[in-house]
Image (tube, rainbow, N blue to C red; front, top):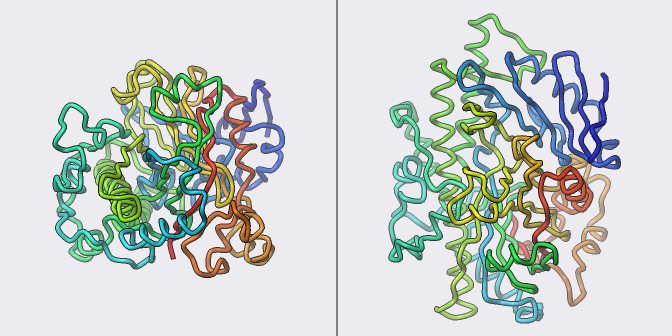
Length: 476
């Protein structure tokens, strides 16, 4: 393994099967561990790879590290379900409120907000949707456009429909014929889960923001102000993507066996983009992206309904932005179409880039980066030098230890201290016992401030606002 240091938190590592770019400051880089390079070298065995990198939150995953960006030409390249991940379309969403931190300083009020939201947002892993009149076939084919108007608050203002204009993509186009192979069980489970949170690291968090002075102009254009209360949502495609992912791992593995293709890791699978397997996967992956953006939209709808019970029927909560961090998307780079895989990586486009949503063409779009419970999250904006990494940045803090190891090494008292239990600044949590979510404590994750320092130091993106947690709903 040879290392070339390009400076500015950018290192290039020559492995047996190709080159890996790593964007991390020295402290984060030293903590990565050997296994991430083994996985990268396995991934680089996929033919005709054009580029591969890790963001600073990189850590070992199944088949591929979380924090991976991997690129192939559309013409003769490959697609890999392993480099998309199991929670297809998992991503972030932020909504703005007119509230300030001072308005909800009272812990009893924050508890009331959490309890009210939980009436409308199912947090149990097997929780069922409240929205029985939503048709899943419309969701997976039309995205947000497939929702009944009653769930799109701004549907009656066609010139200012933030619900569809202030998102990375409101509707993904694909060949709907591939839906014919989906069984009834999958359709039924997906119908039951629209607008549900899910478990693991998914959350709804109430935060207050602090604007970075050097980006105050952009913040104001986005509608942000110091002390503002915002709502951040993290969730994905639930059962729809969750059932597709293992099916495709199995189907691709069978196809690779027929082709006589092997990899050192049986969880790493791939196929030519233009093969039948590749086209079926890309189409159904896009169906999961449609489901995911709708699921986050409906989670936010539930939050809004809950907060109306607390603050009155006139309470509004416009979306700032919605984006994904688990997907493979056709994008134009270097004057040619490429398939950019991002597994635990966020696209952060700079001002003026043609792929920006129209609403954010002049500034670049908000890049939404969560921390961990008790730590800051960040709203960022892409910078021009990000082109060297196909405009990918981190997707969060990134785990530093497994769920089992966290439960063995971290006490409930340490968890309580990290979220300031018993103080006026306590982060209110929906769970009655912290022991049930101990594996999601801040000690399970890398230092998010070091992750952000790595991204900023590499010139990939800049911080617009820091978001401090006030209350959080986690999946049960």
